[in-house]
Amino acid sequence: MCWCMRTTLTLDDDVAALLRRMQEKRKGNLKEIVNEALRVGLVQMATPRKRSALYHTPTVSLGRGLVGNLDDVAEVLAVSEGEPFR
Image (cartoon, rainbow, N blue to C red; front, side):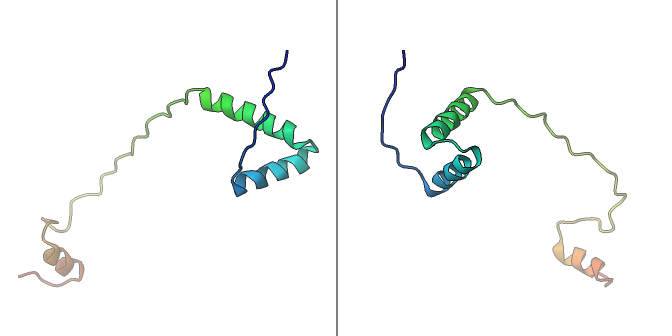
């Protein structure tokens, strides 16, 4: 027994373009393409997403800093430009 539903659906322009391309590619009618896309999409939406593994940034030693305190912007700029500070 088929429980068929007839409805009017307003599609966004980008979705309509994708459907047209798929219809041309698969040589199918619009009803078949829309039903297949909805089946695949709804199953995918209902499936819980896998959590991706956490990424840990590797640490690298850059050695001792050239400036003792990076809070003093004037000192950092002076040292970076090769000028004596104060």
